[in-house]
Image 1 (cartoon, one colour):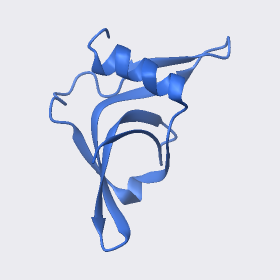
Image 2 (cartoon, rainbow, N blue to C red):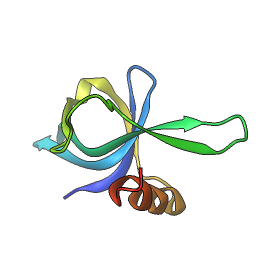
Image 3 (cartoon, rainbow, N blue to C red):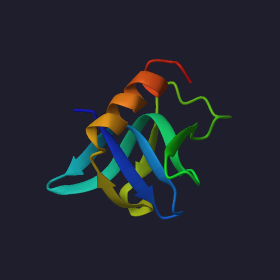
Image 4 (cartoon, helix red, strand yellow):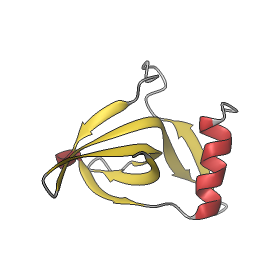
Length: 92
């Protein structure tokens, strides 16, 4: 089942998206990300979205191996709602 999550990549990028985890037994082996966006902190202390890989065709999402992901967390409810409205809802 897909959930809106934030993952931090080994590169330092924090990506938010509809994420489905692929499991082998109890171990996560991959993350499939649909509607990926990068979270960018602003000098005013707010967060901004930027499409991740805007030059790529990601209609079907992208899969990352677990080894590229440092951690994954659930976003705060207001951030999740804003993501769904702006990115998933097509306002971006």
